Amino acid sequence: MTVSRRADFPLLVANPELHYLDSAATSQKPKAVLDAMRAYYEHDNANPHRGAYDLSVRATQRYHDARTRVARFIGLADADCLIFTRGTTEALNLVATAWGHANVQAGDEIVVTGLEHHANFVPWQQVARARGAALRVCPLTEDQRVDLDALRGLVGSRTRVVAFSHVSNAVGTVNPVNDIAQIARSVGALVVVDGAQAVPHMRVGFDALDVDFYAFSGHKMCGPMGIGGLAGRRAILETMSPYQFGGDMIEFVRDDYSTWNVLPHKFEAGTPNVADAVGLAAACDYLDGIGMDAVLSHERALVRLLSSRLAEVEGVHVFGPQPEQRSGVVSFTVADIHPHDLATILDKDGVCIRAGHHCAQPLMRRLGVPATARASFYVYSEERDVDALVRAIERARAIFASPQLVE
Amino acid sequence: MSDLQELYQSIILDHNRRPKNYGSLDHATSSAEGRNPLCGDEVRVELSVTGDAIDDVRFTASGCAVSRASASIMTQAVKGKSREEVEQIFVRFHDLVTGKFVPGEGDARTLGEMAAFSGVSRFPIRVKCASMPWHTLLSALRSAEAAP
Image 1 (cartoon, rainbow over the protein chains, first blue to last red):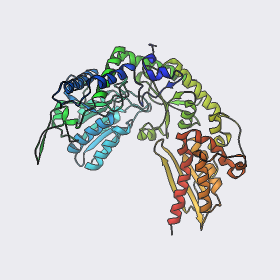
Image 2: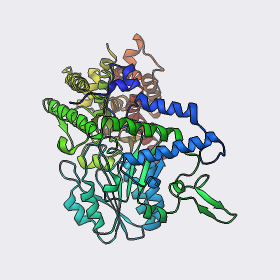
Image 3: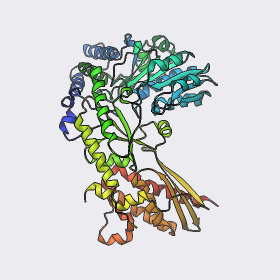
Image 4: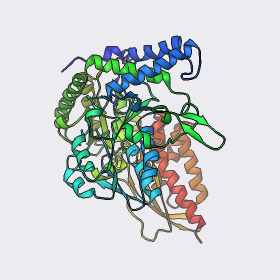
């Protein structure tokens, strides 16, 4: 197992007894990212794209450099095709709103999968409802992978969009992006990928993927909350109308019409989030310093360890495919203990896990459970976190097995 | 007693395992469903109300031990009670789980098994688990009121 980076994370250093196993919800932040954001505010802060003074030029340059850096991290050569958003949710809503409402017609079909987070499900459901189109949900295999044969049967000449997650937030399945994209391409559908759980954990090369849009969040990859991005194909982005209007995104404003700024500004109305972009760029530097292959292998080693340890605990059921087809997520249930009760008991031992539907209610219905418990790893996770989790699960089982019955 | 032992008292664990008044009610006069969108917990409460009193009550639930036990103990506490009495019991229960009411020795008899929920106030995010069945009951009671 590679070395944990716990020492780089001030919150974890300050809380040595904490076992933070909820990185799929949000990651902790390394000192390098916090320092970069502070340095921006202390030395370069001004409103970019506006001032004719040197400080504003510096802020503009920092924002531009951040975009170039983040684009490079996700393998996007044309950095102007990276739109900064508040995160994955806003990025997917941008596509659904700006592309979906303009291009989906009555009688068309939109395909999503049963794995999707609500952020890649509900926007499409709402486009379908508004446009009189149908939303089709691709079935999953028994180990919660996208059923490619079923997908082939599901798409057709009316399919306008195929939207799917690169990695499932709820069970950790890593989907074969290009295989799914190929099926979507065979019917000429737009390909939209939710990469929120992929970009933080593995090397993603947007230009090498056969997809049109790819969304991700900064806060799950050591960056700050409030920034993320949408990578898109230039030819498509240029045909799309803006979905928010205001400062920065315009070219000329007449009394009766306006014209739009060029990419990426056309889709970034209002004062941009420079400090968080700078923080996200620092997070890219930080992760590249470790190496994304090392990040993934560190997490998979922990997933294998936890999976084998949980296999020895009576009543534990783990969802999702084999560790080789999974990111650093282990989603499970413990017989006769509701995940919320489990999370409360684990919390008393400093073990932070997520319990609930993981914003994936359609998936929970397909799993036939109301909720699962989810432990998720990152670069700072350690074997002792696994030990603490398994110990705490045993404690929860002991509490719930207490034999006193009251009559 | 540790916070955890106080939250997961044997009374709560037992009602979770073997809830009372569980299932649907024949001849229900009103019902309501409650959901906690945060966690997906669901409860359904069915009532038979005659005049001012709850003749019978049953529930079904998918949720944590705290919410199931709360629903189970609630059905025992309100059966045969008038609307006004139910409201009073609810206020007392709500104050208990939010920590506004700290029961003394003299309260044990009147609280009955509801006293087992005194530990919930130490877990603020679990208050909703305990109170959701009650809100659902009150909603069912209101719809009974509205019915002709």
